[in-house]
Image 1 (cartoon, rainbow, N blue to C red):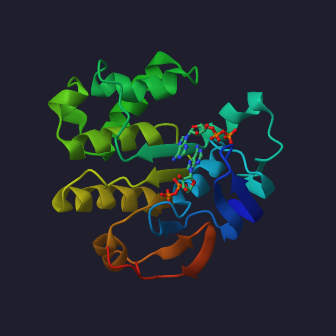
Image 2 (cartoon, rainbow, N blue to C red):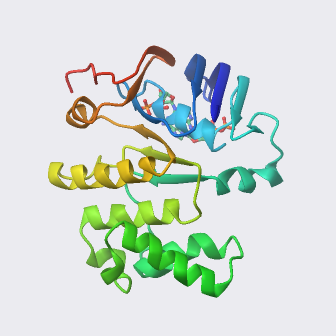
Length: 229
Ligand code: ADP
Ligand code: ADP
């Protein structure tokens, strides 16, 4: 098992309860969609996994790390095995494509030679080797998202978490991004993806976890999106 949650609750400081008793197991190599209405708790669920948010109650294990009792100084080690992709890309605007990806490896104290090799390898994987010297503003939305995916996988993470990765992209571009994520998954990386795309979920069939009012209301292999929008 790679992610296990038991009896997980999250109440924020303002009194809002975002998660109301989550029990779930996700195995290495799975591709999982997280769906549900806005405010259901999807982002909170995802953020618990890389310790962006701490649970109020319950136990969480990720890659053998006990997330609840993890000491602050050990959080970076947990995060080395997790790549995160956001809806709004979160690229550094003044750095080139190359530098945005290299930056993720430099903080890990890799040698310059290894960094160079790995950056070009992942840029090739997402089809952007020829744009290494561009800055984010010079790229389309889909290309920027591919850079952010390259950055997320640069360190060979076991898990990639994507929070609405196609939310800002047109349909054609969204399918391209899905193709890249499916390739990464085919290499054994677990993918956990929150999405509002009915088309994607109902076409590329994967496990679907539906969250409503902070609980899992549905968990199906090759599931449907299940909502009208
Ligand atoms: P902790 O992780 O220790 O519980 P919080 O996440 O509650 O800390 O603190 C973050 C702050 O950001 C809160 O005070 C909250 O008011 C604010 N915040 C961020 N996102 C939201 C949101 N979606 N709704 C309401 N408040 C938010
Ligand atoms: P979703 O991703 O499904 O839209 P979220 O996990 O973002 O759901 O939010 C679940 C609930 O928790 C919402 O009511 C939201 O306003 C609240 N919330 C999210 N983050 C915070 C925060 N940092 N502080 C306070 N409330 C928050």
